[in-house]
Image (cartoon, rainbow, N blue to C red; front, side, top):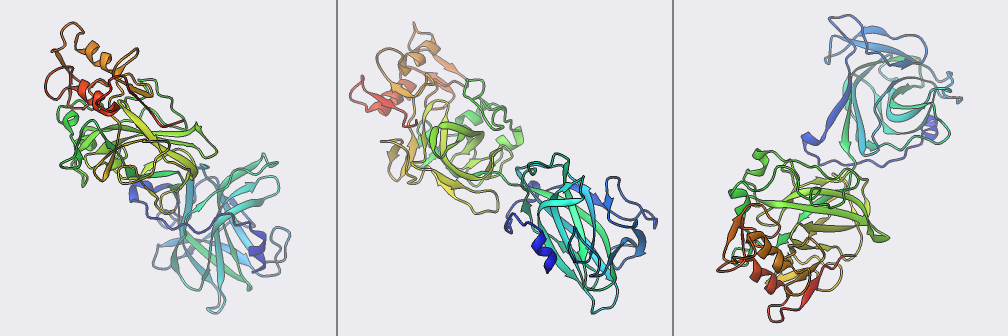
Length: 438
């Protein structure tokens, strides 16, 4: 139709695989209260005010809005239509979807095409600037659920524009439309991580899983530890918390092992942090969000990024190249850091059989594993247990607990000092291992 040529459709149809918890209703409109016509404040109408009208099976009353015919002018054009608009909160990291019930009053062979958009509204001229939505012909009463669209930012040069939902009807005849049960929902349009990582400290090669000793002893904190350790946070990362129920649940991948840190870095310069997010890792390496889902969302738009994963006492690793990080429902790239995923640099991870694990032993929280010499990791372990008595042990949540069994131990069986020596090569104590991240 001619009218469609005047609408700037800026987003493709987005298939969604989100869980119900990721869909949020932000606006509803029911056009009836005990049989009396009513509506929420904020609506802008074209033409005469709407009137109550009998509805079909979807409710006792609906709003009846004149559509008029093809001789009416619409935004300076020649197509006949009538519209209604209501402001909505705008979030660039969300997709918007609109559903409604619609009917028409007129001859059965005359259709009304109802268009539903989320758009910026020029309050000075009364015109939409750009929009994304759907349209459907209405031949009889029915429920219509729109697909989700990502909304563009506020147009330049139109400071008086408002973002909201625009509903308009188009017809070739002089008929009317009935509307009711308007619902606007949002879904995240954010970069999403799905994948796994294994930590060398608690890793058991026989079972190919990690120990959850820290969780068993109640040592895993409910608030992420990386902010307190001085790690920079950007784009909404930092301060993530988890409930005891999520922390202690049993998942398909086992139990929670510890907090890990995810990073998205600039595709053209991987030294630049674009977004951070703290998450949890399960015994089989699966990374989950603080709500227990396998979808970890960043407060940043999907796009091309280097993907990095880090841990408080391991050397981190990063993808060898930037990848397209999708949004939920936009396809899933699984970042298998534990299963053959190529890393940035030389020997970025430790290979054990067919698994790849992060190098353990970074007790000093820098980017180098050192067993001897100045600023080495071994002395950090000794310092925590007391320094003067190497056989002492200390229990708790420490970065010096390299094997993550809940006990910092310098000497004797299953100590943390030996894990550092093995990580740097095992035969030359003066050797070092540098984290392969820019």
